[in-house]
Image (cartoon, rainbow, N blue to C red; front, side, top):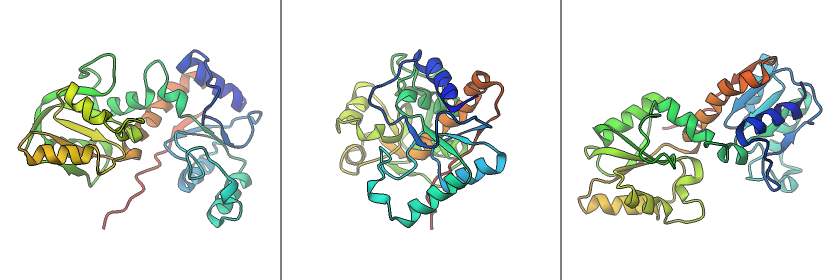
Length: 268
């Protein structure tokens, strides 16, 4: 099976074959005519992920995020950069094909990045509004206990919170990745907390003068509001983990393996 056939099967399953005219979902390396030996799904094609793909004999990496450090993988500024040149050589020497699966994954029948995270949290039956993947209701707990649950489920040792860890909470919002920046409307996360009467927002990326400041002021006013910063990678990796399960039957003749890109931070 060639690379293009794998891509076509994915897009047919997710979007009925619909293809966006303008998209970042393009090849970052290799050709659509290459025969696939195995597939790796991952949040990001880091050097370690590429090495793992090489080790298991997979030559197609499906990554959710960019390979070359900017949103559209622009290369003009990198031509003499040593990091780029070394990474490019690693990819070329082992004939690795990298395809980005971002826009179409978020616009699928259901947003499959959210789907993966919700499966990982086992909250599939907790959605408040079936029309959106953003709001959930869980058994009454505290912000601190919810943070401990997230650390355990998402394989984290450290989380940042805004608000009082003793605050009660049951109505939880989730904005994965860059969604917590508002998707072009800085006020969107705050409006969502108000509209859905949310106690806690679980976030990917943050800007400290928007939702962070709003929740901080609310807590200072004695309101039971909080936010938990999980980070971009830890909120979105799970969509790529569970992609391996739904992709496997679509390409049954090929091995499909999830490789965790892992959280990029070390905490001192």
